[in-house]
Every structure is written in structure tokens, then in C-alpha cells.
Image 1: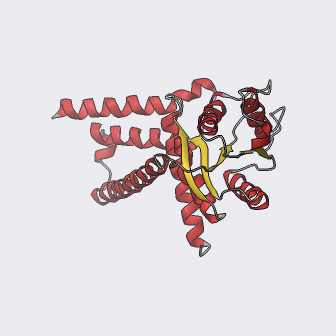
Image 2: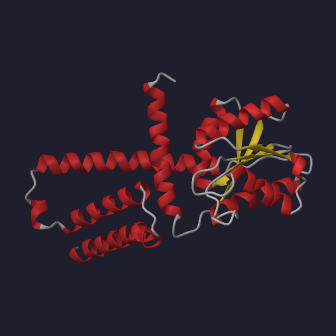
Image 3: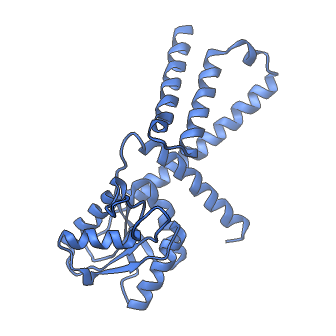
Length: 251
């Protein structure tokens, strides 16, 4: 029995190290920290060190119950995220919405943004009558707006620039969808949208799209495997915060 507990603790610690590995690339966010902390706590519970055994039984039981409830909520949110990521468009044409992310210093898309552009390109090629909204503003570290980078890259690959509308004011997912919805209404485009973004981002994007009067489907793309689990964990927190905030505001 002790060997099983030690093996389980070793697995937990290895997974914790995996979540924190992006630190070597200078990346740190909550989606790395809290899973690593929970896994380290699980390892401690399995190893049952002396300090842990000295804790009052009620505290250990309360902590275990809270941990279990939190993990159940996290699992439910992750399942909903995966379901929305798999909600692919049907055969009818949709308006493609490409959600921007960081542009590199030379004006080229980063790996994550290129994956989103690839997803949009595949759909636009297969649906030549569909239009596209490139959405994303410009931060202080970007030479051009994310929207311009998306349009330039799609145009360079053969997509007619006249099919691509720019939304270059947004600085968040909420603004992405809110400003895009305004363009769609102004231009009389199809309010049924196919969102080109990472799989983990699809649920939160669809929530904002629905609040803006759009019907969202997924052109999701997989994230780079060393970073993907942390992004999924971070996004799960963002979804919970979004829904809790909506409940507190009576929405």
C-alpha cells in the first residue's frame, strides 16, 4: 500500500513540474500555478508527512471536501469547454471571426496566432462566399494591430482582401466579440459565426458572442502541447469568473 501511495505522489509531483515547465520560457500565469499547487497538495496527502498527520481531523476532512468540490467544478467546466470546441460549423456558410493574439516583433504572427489563421484559411477556402472579420487591437509590444496581421497573412495566402473586414480596436475577448458584432450588423453579414481560436478559448468566446447577439460555432485549433494544459486550466478559471460575475450582476 505504501508503494502505491509513493508512486501516486511521484506522479503528482511530476505533473506539477510539467505545469510549471513553461517558466523556462519566461511564461507564468495562474493556469500553471494552481494546478501545480493542487498536485503538490495531493502528493503531500499521499505521503502523509508528520505535519499533515498532526492537523486536526476536521480540518483535513474540510480541506478534502473543498478540494473535491473544486475539482468537480473544474472537471465540469473543462467538459463544457471541450464540448464547445467540438461544435463545428455545418455545411452552410458562416461569417468567420479570427480572434487575435500576440504579434511578433517583425509583424509576423506568433505560433498561436498562425494556428488561428490556418483554421480560418481552411474554412474560407472551402467556403468561397463566406466573409471574415479579423479582430484584435495593438498593444505596446506589437508593430501592427493583430487584425492587420491576420488580414495580411490571409491575403498573402490568396484570400481576397475584400472578403476580410478589420476590427482593430479590441483589447479583450469581450471587446473582440462586441466590436465584431457591431461590424457584422453594420455590414449585414451572417450573425452565425465560426470562431477561429484555440480550442480552450471557444467556450468563453461563445458566451460573449451569444451576449452580443451572435450564434457561435468553433474553428478551434489545438495548442502547443507544452503550454496547452496550463492554458486550459487558466481558461477554466476565466470561465468561472465570467459566469460568477454575470450572476452577481443579475445577468
